[in-house]
Image 1 (tube, rainbow, N blue to C red):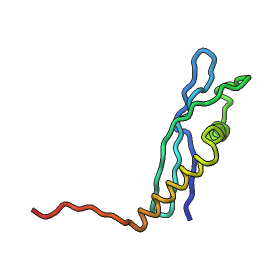
Image 2 (cartoon, rainbow, N blue to C red):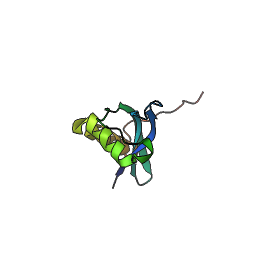
Image 3 (cartoon, rainbow, N blue to C red):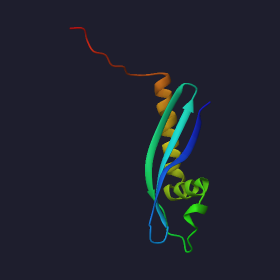
Amino acid sequence: MATTTWALANVDYDVSDGFCHTAHWTVKTVDGDYETSSYGSTELNRPSSLTARTDLKTADIIADVKAILGTDRVTAIETDLTDQITKLKTPVQGSFVPAS
């Protein structure tokens, strides 16, 4: 059974006020010995009041990223990673270097 995990690679912020404006995220799907991943960046919306950068939690930022991306895009990313695992398990193409 595949497990999919969202994580933050980095968050960019403005030094002047601490506003975290861009989240760089990764999504990893693991199924036994097989693993695939995706990376992206999402611009975050400025809230009406800022939470101190040191008080922000990864889960909250990931939730914001998913909300901005929307359910269809999140599902597409996760489905693509699962499809990649399926292709790794049962390849439909191969490659080789012919003998000289």
